[in-house]
Length: 378
Image (cartoon, rainbow, N blue to C red; front, side):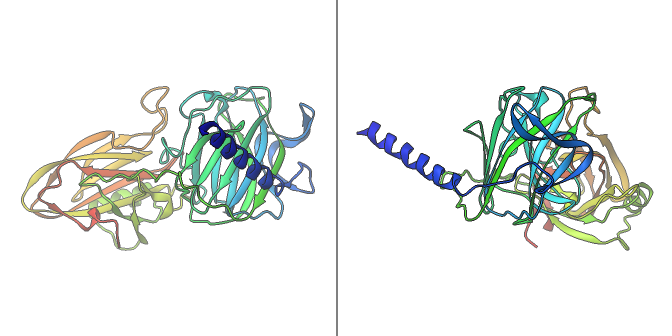
């Protein structure tokens, strides 16, 4: 009886999937359907399929708009350092949801990546681990079938018919928008190619599965849950203001942290030229003069000022510490912070170069401290 029940359940699932597949709309890779952008991209035939070839560039599906539904495509590549992916719920040239593969990290823990792109900024150093990456082994030089099921606030990713990544919480504020595919060649990859074929999609209702896990949450006591974040500033301006405790002039945004405890500064500041520095600050009241241990993380480079005095400078950029160092944000460092009795101003001057503009902090033992920054609500 149990075997019969399992068979019927599998049959019902397959029948439902087949019915949903009947609603998928094909988007052939040709100029009528796709708008190409980039220096090394074009239409081709690969492994007998009409395809899109990309070494460096992107292609937007003309007239597309998807919120919930299904995205499906075939992709082929070798093991070169390349980052091919799909944009969905694209709002404009700088904001979209993004799922991409890392062929050169085949079978690794980060062989793929989900992240939002916000203000044109990639964010993989902020969003990492469960819910953002999964271990996958791809076929090289052959087609891999990727299928993404988009729900209102979450998604599932299937690779070659098997669920690979569960995304409990989509991070972009956009609820619908355009579709695109792309690829960017990494350092040292001068000739590698990525091929897309058989792109199909369906835009329509898609309910979140009952077994979708809840997003992981950081509930540590003493976590800084709300920051005041400046607009993007130059290095000199940000450093002068932090040293003088001078907050007048720039636009400030109250920024709550993400569920995992990191404040994504790109939600408040947009990097432009030399203005790639932001001040992320909070104040804390101490019931007496004391030293408190502060755990911290940031991307990429940070200076920490306490009541105007420079206390710390660190570099968490990718490759800054060893050839395999990724610069992922987490509470990986600890700093002794001298506090005076009463109110204290703590300011992080954070520089962004690539991979994510973020900051995270937690007082290990918050007894004797009071701050509105411990509460994420406005």
